[in-house]
Image (cartoon, rainbow, N blue to C red; front, side):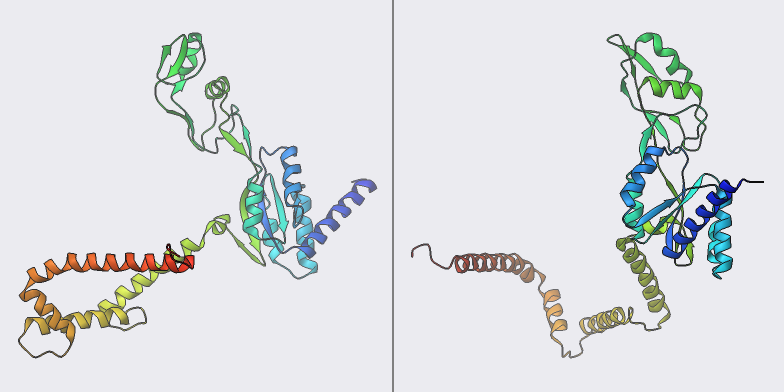
Length: 312
């Protein structure tokens, strides 16, 4: 049976969690493997204006969340409690989720590859000089890395991937990367889930930009327009295309027949078809004239801006 002092400590921790739940409705569930206490201090300092980090025993935090959910008829916190598995914590915030996420991401720290750890990214050893003496070639041979001796030092001939993402780091790979002074991994809080006003979703949603939304909307609108044009069902997006296509057909009929036409464009197209050489010769002259007029207008505007003539 726990002592009175431990019970008081647990009750104080539970009350602290209740206060957080009363204050915050948004935040992140984060994974904290390989994150040092110094990193936690820096993260807390960086986001303390509008956020707080909750780290503790999962059993204690889950129990506090469930008690709060029952007392306040808020089953959403039961869902959050179910997600607290492993070395995880909760970041509560009242700020913009994207800004807080970006701020926390700044506190990643480079770390060497340790034997037995799981690689979070691919590790590539770059080609070039290593500064190691020829006696160290056994490390490279064990990992099938092509090398040569250049000016008394080992030189790697090609870029070589020595560890793939998700693989366990072997002792040879760890020793080689240590000798090359390569710190391939960067550890920090990993965002697993985002919760906001009763909703839970993936952190990838926060990476969606306005450009992504516009591209998705444009693609959908294009598909709707294509279906509407193919089926003959008018929509706001297809009507302009239908008008243009209809006008093209009328123009084609007018140009391809001898009927009298009453609109200018058909007459102009007929003239172009009857005497294409004249229009071909007139086009460069018209372009040059337009360019000269634009240049004169630009010079006049420059004089007007100065407020006086060069000869005043």
